Image (cartoon, rainbow, N blue to C red; front, side, top):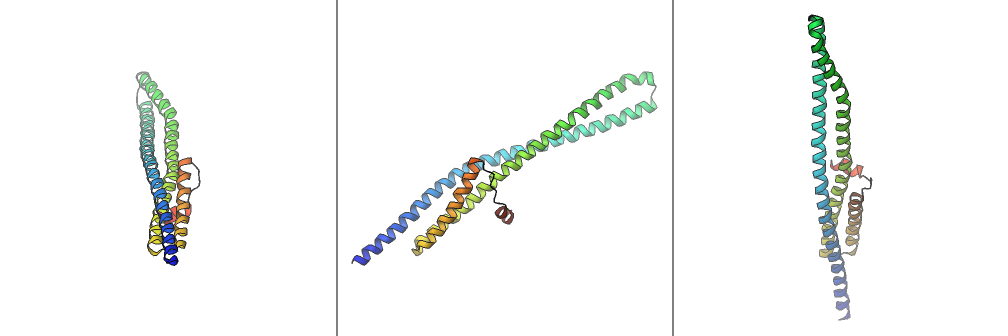
Length: 184
């Protein structure tokens, strides 16, 4: 009779540990999902802004080339007296486009860099999500087969998932490059 009681107590202890593990990891996973969703929205905005800035840059460079070509044609073909006001206007446009283009390129590059920085954190949350989901699955199997060592394996995956989630929340630069390379 005592053997049955101790066996029951062992089962309850394992099941209790599995239940606590699943609750903690599930809550953490949910909170990480919210933060990851916000990061994905910021990434989409940064990407959109980058594309817009590169388009503006390209338009400025195109207008610059058209203005320079027009100026050259007018200077070569027109009467210098009558062409002077048109050439002055084109010179102003050319100066404006030359001044505008580097700033647009720098803005586009900055938006692209922001996207890349946010992508690191998105990858961290993705790694956290995968590790925590694996931990929850292994913990469930540990409860089914009543195996303590499987619970330890689940805790290992869970610890890595918690670490990656904390990296994302705290802005740490740790990046699971190997994992991202395999899965990306």
